[in-house]
Image (cartoon, rainbow, N blue to C red):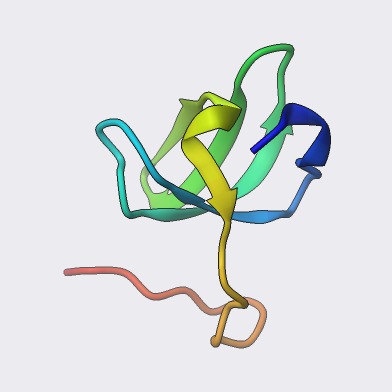
Length: 68
């Protein structure tokens, strides 16, 4: 994915690295990396090359699925 294609609030899937196969929401865009909220008590920064657009979220706004 290219940095120019990413906008705030965009849902993405992580395709490479430690957080592979996770889905997150873009909350900030830097000069080289993108800050993501992955639904855990931490935020992660990823390179745009490790991201791809995520499928449409089946949950209504305000709901999120997580593992216990």
